[in-house]
Amino acid sequence: MVERVLRKVLKESRVATEIFYHQQNRKLTRFANSEIHQNLEQDKGEVTVTVYDEGKKGSASTTDTGYASVKEALQQALKNASFQEPDPNFVSFPKPQKEEPPSLDSFSEATAHSTPAQRAEVVKKIVDGARPAELNAFGTFSNNLSRFSVINSEGLDRHWESTQAYLKTLMMGQGGEGYAEDLQVDMRDIEVARVIERARQKCLDTKETHDIEPGDYTVILEPLAVGAMITYLNMIGFNGQACQEGRSFFSGKKGEKVVSPSITIIDDPWDPENLPLPYDFEGVTKKPLPLIEEGVFKNYVYDTYLANKGEAKSTGHCLPPEVRNMGAFPLNLKLKPGEFSTEEMISKTEKGILITRFHYLGVVHPTRTIITGLTRDGTFLIEKGQVKKALKNLRFTQSIIEAFNNVQSVGNELERVPAFAGAVLAPSLMLDNFTFTGISKEN
Image 1 (cartoon, rainbow, N blue to C red):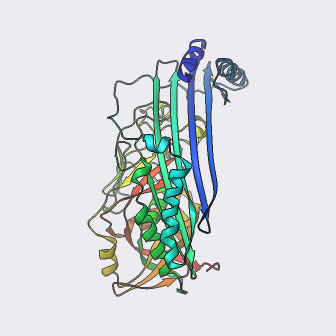
Image 2 (spheres, rainbow, N blue to C red):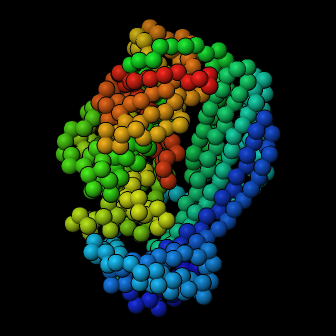
Image 3 (cartoon, helix red, strand yellow):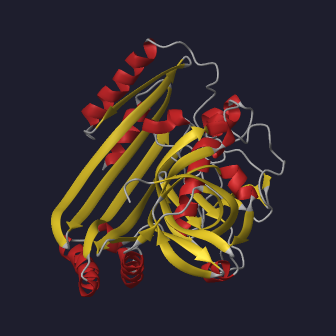
């Protein structure tokens, strides 16, 4: 048993030590031109040993979970530490907490033990749904199992597991493209019929696209587009290290109004509609944390290292060892839903643009939260409360904070959108003065 090996090696260390283990079993079925062309399964585990010897940090990893290899990783970590300067900001690894998370539905046997035949049945439904409209289906269906263990010299000893089933498809034909996806803990909860209908209809609706002049428009962003914006706001704004170092828009703004009162964003690892997580990746118990509440910035996020550096307390947002130097991040974001359906937003729009999703996103100015990107797989002109025609894809350059200050309506339904090492529960949003700077030449 891996945990027994980790504990044995930990007992042999005489310095501050953390041992982190991650086993991942990834199963994937790919399909293109309405045919499956690849099935793969990857199963790997990795142990990372991190030590602080008189304040000097060293790390080493191994994919061999036997005692000799893990002990060698400890020795290599100690050797690596000897070449470093002491870190005055390190105090200790987290101590065991009395707080325990509630029972969370984060694991599914069906997902963990899925077979190629079971995934093929889902793909067949996608292909069969595309065929009557003479469309070709492309996409992937992945089923992932992750097991985590983290123990440290302070006595912390945590173990948990989670699963994710992720179906996405792009339908193409007759000049159009349509995309849809679904992400669940249990593969049996994937809404295949909804994915088929959404991708097929988007494809048929985009058979003929039209030009529109770039400029500022009212937009209605569907959940995939909203989820992308929140993901980027997380990366450049909610990042605990960036906030602490003054590199975030939110630095020094705790308690200040930053966006529209219609916007409330919470990090909620206990929400069953998200991808629940009991602990962060250094074993600290996670719990709900409001980030923006009715437009007011409420909280920074910390891991133990950043909390000690800032004389605060960990909020349970540590990342895995291989990316821990990026800072602390929320992984279970939710934008609180509003009162309107997407159809109601459309009906009250005199002139605007309906956007399915974004791609090729990039950061232009982090502290001003300006990003750029393209619309994709369904961009439509709205006139006098009705969707009139499909548009060619547009390039936008837009501050996320400014966009969230121009909220007219918030959707009443949430969708789970994959994000940076987690997920976002996002509604549709109706925004004013969204800036488009050009038309894609690929259309």
